[in-house]
Length: 331
Figure (cartoon, rainbow, N blue to C red):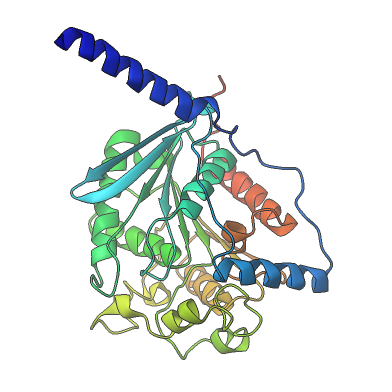
């Protein structure tokens, strides 16, 4: 009877796996062009979209692309998720995604969906995402400690020269903090850093764009009351001075950090964060590229990947990665 049950259970499992993948959509592919608007129409489009998003009218239902592998596990108690791209079996590239959310937001379906795009645009074999501990319950260095644990796990699996670290918003801050910690502990750096709309200082009153773009940034500005207030009340800092280099990397020694691409929107709160990082990195002889996308809000490529500016940013990422890493082997 037990053997019959085992056969039946195996059949049910196989059927379950079949039904979960048979109807899955093909993986996202990098389009030649996105939606193009005039400057005025673009802002109307973004405002309409973000209004619906903030009212909860836009839902994200993440589906694992057909043929991809998706698993959940933990590293030292840190929840980790892994996606494997079946079209890149011979690629050695691995993406490590550090999600945004002001250090108060969990890994979400939006970031799982964006992870597929990150893997495709970089031709990576696999991508790892972690759900680090959040403020205000857990303050600095909780998120950084969690990130280091997972990075070391990936390091053992892939090798530093194959790792692409992506960080957006708070995740961009975390990516820089990770590289600084790696330097302090004499651990290998990733091949490149890709920073999307990164926060580079926890100070709340230093940079003009934090106030000048408060109305123009339709993602992180005054229209998004919760996150706008979070910018000016950075609870993750705990009792650490806001100018501490581990929180505000524009005050850190950036020598010997990996080649870094920074992408920011011209209308976002963190424009000056990117500019100040560029100045400090240049002074420290760090290899850095800064691109400002005109009229774009915070995290535009994450939330509005259909726009032509986002498609251009994806192509820039692809070219940047190919510049600094060996091309993936073809099937």
